[in-house]
Image (cartoon, rainbow, N blue to C red):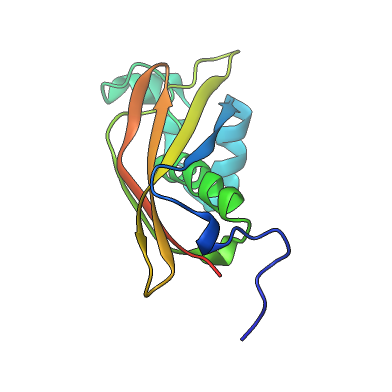
Length: 146
């Protein structure tokens, strides 16, 4: 069995109620273009204002999987080991609107809601917001810790 990375969070040091450090990401239109190129998701609602408005959106929006990835990264950083995350899921509740010439702030906060002694896992509930609105619902990760 391989050793956990140096600095990985230990199960015995985690308690229900522990809070993850809040992280804020600033997403720009350039970030959306880069994500579209990397992911292959070239849906125009993520880059073209007219296309976004034509389908009833207020403006260009961030990719849902990009937003989910930002939340997942917060859990990985907290755990100290990206391989520690054994499950992660969410529901997309509201879009992250990214205006032209400005950044959209995406805030990720979380807390430990449960521990499983036998599996040595911690369940982390996440709160992900943008412009004061919850953009991910039921965002939950399970992390296995050494």
